[in-house]
Amino acid sequence: MITCRTAQQCGQADFGWLQARYTFSFGHYFDPKLMGYASLRVLNQEVLAPAASFQPRIYPNVDILNLILQGEAEYRDSEGNTIRAEAGEALLLATQNGLSYSEQNLSSTTPLTRMQLWLDACTERSNERIQCLSLLPKPHTLLASPDGVQGSLQLRQQVWIHHLDLQAGELQELALNGPRAYLQSIHGTFSATGEHHDSQTLTCGDGAFIHQENRLTIQAETPLRALLIDLPL
Image (cartoon, rainbow, N blue to C red; front, side):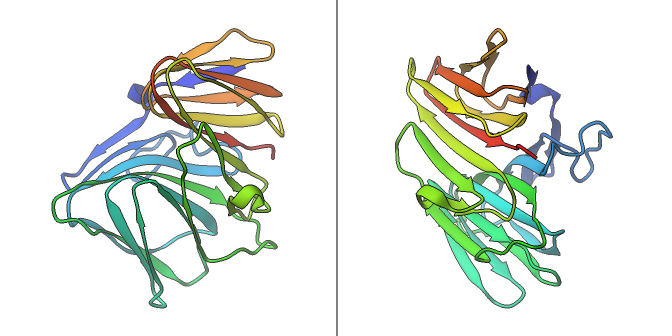
């Protein structure tokens, strides 16, 4: 089953310095039926105004994946560690108990646009506290995985995150490891087809819950960027 959740159905925020779209309950947006999906706790698209920042805060035990779509950001923890990431890069922060983290848009003229995911971290797993990956212009990239295969970011959870970058008319078929996944359009329009159900059409900002599908076929109608988050547990 493929159950669509359109961009218009998501939570919205506009604080001037921050504009955001929330897939699941976050901040002021609360829906008791949408508290996350399996180990995926947060899936936000956020735009920070030039020079804006998130002040230091402490997070639950999660891996935070930031996919930078526009601009450049600096991340800092309370131990003084810093890293910068820019458009075309993905950054993974393995949050630690007792540490706080801040985020700064480094440009005084350009907004910072990014996707942010939080994934519950298994306490018995460990990975590098900060990891960064530059995305190459190819149709499919394994962005993150439990064991860091194919040069992917390593997660503290049984989750596989795929990044798709397709031209109009291109097709990508992906095998899923378990009964659940979440599909998110960053931009572009495409059809998603499972093995046993009719296709669904998604466009910019739309998402879809994937249930009980072993394989998924993505057919781009326009130039497309999308994430497929494979959540077997």
